[in-house]
Image: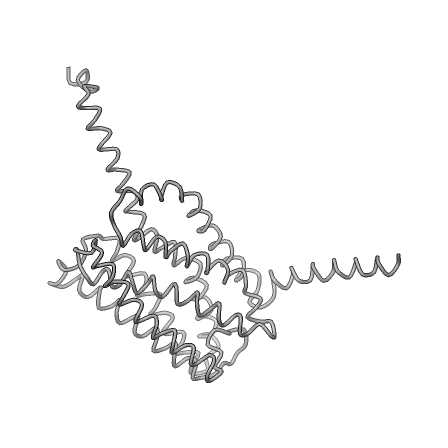
Length: 291
């Protein structure tokens, strides 16, 4: 009996220690809490809106919106799993699993990011099946090359590009991230330049898209600066990079939804309200008001 009680007490202590490690270790409580709460709330919001969203999508004919919404669901679940698995980054023996999960999660988010950029650069005629194939084809090629390059770094050269629990880290790793962020910064800067130039009419006429581009330009420019500092041995750059990673994984997907999908669902609501109003007007409901 005494041995059983000791075993039970030990299991309770180990489980409580495991929860303490999961919540407080690795990058700390606030790092883990912000990631988990933000990603969980967004997935919960998508779940609460799912029935209404599916009905609207089934009545619509936008292949891009339907495909993008499905992709957003998949990437959001991946990102939620990534946020809940932060302890793996600091656990010996979990490096391969953490790197694999990080590779798929970041590649999924990059796919959404590149797809939206390809959508913007195609202009206003982007609602056909051909536009969907072109948009996702371009994104698939770019992200496929990115996955291949990162997989070579990870599994061929053994460079821990997704493990940031220790400092300093290999200089080669930060060269990769500098190039990665530099390319994204240049693309966002190019789109913003087009928006303020005589080629503005070739872009979709939605101001929300360019607010998104401005936010992403600032985020990538700061992350690029942080990678450059860290690659040159500055500890502040390492902290700044961590902060930008938290912002990206916690808030990028909600920003993407608000920018690209929320307007579609809102427009559908306004369209239905106009239809109902027209039907009621034809039925004579508002004649008394005119009289």
